[in-house]
Amino acid sequence: MAGCIPFRYLLGLGLAALLLVGCGGQVPSGFVRLENGRFHVDGKPFFPIAVNYVMHLQFNDSACWAAPFRNYEREDRFRYQTKDSTHRLIKAEFELIRKLGFNTVRITSLASDMKLQGDSLYPWLPAQYGWGKDSLYPLNGDRVEHYFDAVDDMVLLAEETGLKLIILVKLFPGEPSYLRQALKLVDRLRDRPGVLAYDFFNEPLYFDVHDRPKREVHELVKQWQKRFKAHGPNQLTTIGLVGVPEVFAWDPNVLAVDFVSFHPYEYEPNQVMSEIHWYGKHVDKPWIVGETSLPADNDSVPYAEQLSFAHRTLAQTVACGGQGYSWWQFKDVKWGRFHSDYMGVLSMAGETQVAPDLPMVHGTVKPVWQAFSTFDPTAPPGPCIVPDNYYNFSSITGAKLTGKLLDRDRRPIEGGVIHGWNEHWTRSYYTKSKADGSFELFGDFRFHHWMASATRCSMVRGDCDPNAFYTGADSIPAYYLGELTLEDLHLGE
Image (cartoon, rainbow, N blue to C red; front, side):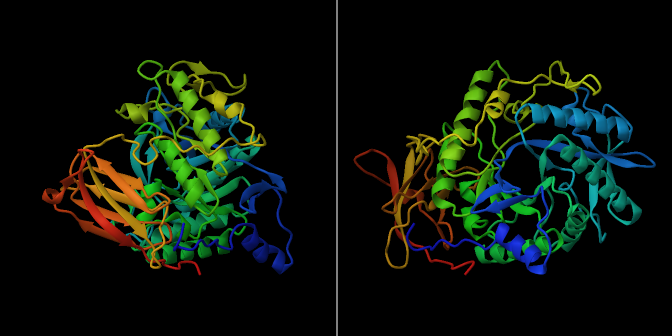
């Protein structure tokens, strides 16, 4: 892409080596490192094949411990009320995850669902009392130490099973309590090689304020990175981005993390394949697919279709230069929407035995597991496919915005993102610019609002008069935005 110059941060192995070897210490074994943009463990290549696993904090009047997500149980409540029994269940589910071909688990909720209460100087964690009564657990005093014990015990169970962990934490701009809490956790786990990485922020497109400037995002993440590396120099960092539309603020190439995680989902045909192609061509940092899935109940959507999706998107990830792949999620749930309820590797029906001395796992393994168990990261990659609908995966032609993206030297910008909305900001579509900088953004309504940006570049935005659309030879009402100039922000230099 012309105009907005690529920059690679000095992170990963280089930074860890400066922190450790430069001080005369030995590089610890067992930790996942980045070497030349690829993951390694003790000098051997490591390709994370991960499953997302929701974990809650369960507690009683005298203790607390990590527990599998209450919704993973058919009765929607915890199966056990003691730490030892619950640990055996976690052990069973971790063993099953390993047998299904996964080598990594992304843990959500246990360290990320925190909230502040009133004027409290410390966070509170939504937790479940007894069988699963919703409550809040204060992370202060002795209780926070018990909480750290609970997380540490869970990490040890993963290490015993041969699994690496990506732990989602909660950081938020302007909320130092969350950062202090996260750094205390990093201090506790700094010597645990089972912790592959900490995930700073889940999907800022949805959970951050709108219109945060890229320069502010860059400086913010740079400070987070500096603090985390001071407390846990041997563990990596990432941020979970929704995907291409994050480029307007949480631009992947201006984030000072070790690697970027993307969360593409199949709302339109080949949307995930298209997203992955864009990552491979326009992201110059190491990246993985941190969440993806296709829901399947073997009725309206056959299990075979889910398996095919996993095969295709995993192959596309490797072909386009991705360094890992994560499935959402471990089990089906009952949240009330088809899209979220049937994404699991396991259905909710039946039971699965892992070992005679471990509890039965509720649920039956779906055929999608075969995509992970048969995956060979050393096999030669295929082509990074450009789907036919790459520029219009909705295949809609009701109206369009047209124009061209240029840098300040009037060179075309390829891979820029143009996003358009209706009058009330309730519906939108986006597209990417082509090699000559031109774009056509299609929708099924006449656009009112738009913005455009590209990685490492500034953003421009505006409104268009729906009455000013013209209809050309293709009979599609169009609004010409003209030549849009984007400035290189020079972030990271």
